[in-house]
Length: 102
View (cartoon, rainbow, N blue to C red):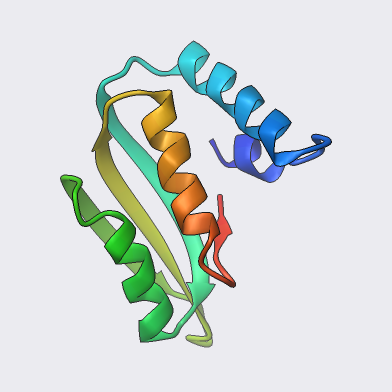
């Protein structure tokens, strides 16, 4: 999944999300548990902002700090209904400054 998000050579975010939707629908069987991965500066405020995006979803969480504890990686497995639901989560998290989606 990482290369789907990282490969952002599209002309616009609309094109990117359209392409992402096609890839998700081709490779996943929704509804399902979907794994989201993010890297963020190890700041409690930023991590809490990400958690809030998942408030209305059933999810499990794993965190890991980088070697020097400057960054935290978050792996969040959440039950999603369809590709649009996945994209909605990525868009909401994308509004949080300094978060890298994988």
